[in-house]
Image 1 (cartoon, one colour):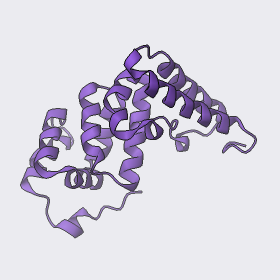
Image 2 (cartoon, one colour):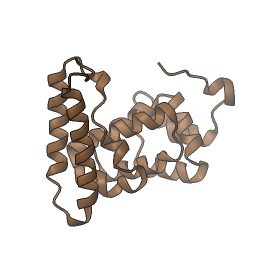
Image 3 (cartoon, helix red, strand yellow):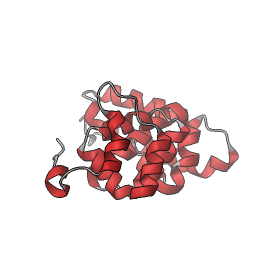
Image 4 (cartoon, one colour):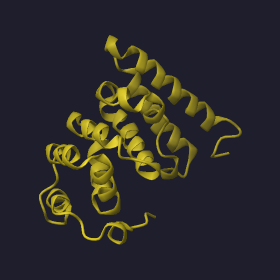
Length: 179
């Protein structure tokens, strides 16, 4: 569970943040990648990430990042410099989920900033109660990355596949987390 301490540390949210984050409120129009990128440029990733993390916006951003949409992948890259601990981990997991949908775009747009180690570490194990379900999700991800045919992504593809297959071997080992 996140500790919601932004109001204690920073008092009221800035007017600019309120204008950018207001669309995340129930019934409001959703935030756009362009608006978020503009806010990141104006106020910096640390401030924006902290406000999103401590407010209702972080999960919404992660949902969009998981889509693998190129604009949201660029938002993830811009957010990266402002993340730490939980926000960094959840952003990397969302990018890993995006591999299932648009693996080539994830490697092209995100791998130069994040590296393949973070985004190709396998699905969030906390979301699975059975080894077979986890392995099936991992196999879908391996299949999506394997299907990348662009020559300029060959090195990242190979690195990502190596990481994913290593995770798979560990999950299936006698010492794996489901054993």
